[in-house]
Length: 443
Image 1 (cartoon, rainbow, N blue to C red):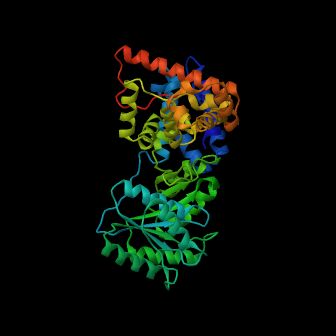
Image 2: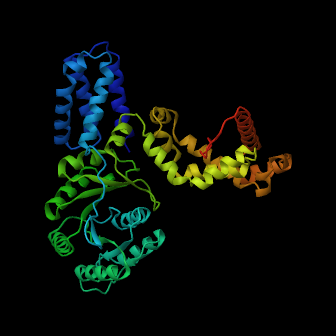
Image 3: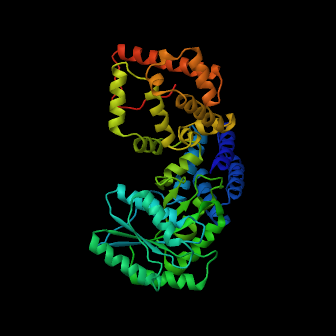
């Protein structure tokens, strides 16, 4: 979502690095460009003003102006200030208190509150918690049924009673059930509106007073930009937010909400939604996002995604097969699926330092398309053919090309690449190399 901002800032810093020494004049010129880039990214104008003032006061300091690498020093200052702007460090959930601990999810309709509740339940289960999803939206048609559906998808129990007299009654009943069944977190999916109104805020305030939740989290749509920031400020005044979950951060938003919301409300961003899948909810790390914005990549998030997508047992078994020189097209196909489980290829590769801008310039969708065509070719083979590529004569290759919607030339190219990969692996093993359970790179 930060692509345009990243490209604009990269151009600014390239010009800065071109100067042998920096003066107050060329720093001021660069900061004017940074200001335009941030405003175009829909960052709140007051936030932009304060941010640039802090950067200017540090960037014109003697330590920067006399530095051997002044351009890099200014980038460092901007990185640190962007990180501070978004909260400084990862803000974790606070679930202290006697179980069941309450977590209120609030927000406007359409922000993805119900889906986010299920994603958060899945996250808590992986952390060793036992959440109970609570349907407290009793006015929106089929809201209870929707929560039951998404709850079942992530394997979390749901308390839904559309006949309850009020949201407060539903929450009290859910708390009693959680205490009886041993659930330790109540995830309350509250009602929303198309816009903020007094009845909604009164209902949320009553729920908060009765439940005394450890967390009150606003679910906001990053695609709405400054509207998300304005609604966050309204919710914060009415019920007192402890954090924010930004949804659709993988979409074509300009990034203003992520950069503004902490400064405007004081409430930290705790999670971000990066896709539709149940696992597409990630803790928000300001320093990593700042690195992505400045084109530095995000290796730590890349490693975490890889660890989540690839089971250690599977990686060890694959490494053992490679050690015995038994790596097949079936294993190659498995590796392909593991890469896809990490998210869109363009998004994954953008986490590698220096690759993000290069991918955009080259047309980042081409890698994704090539991956899909490779998968189609592999899926058009029988399992026996994937286990023994020597079977793939001319007629079989024509059949595979027809079945995958590709050409025989593409099938031949894939098989050549695979043969080259096997050759490299054999040489590596003969030289005494060890894979130690790591995933293998795709050729």
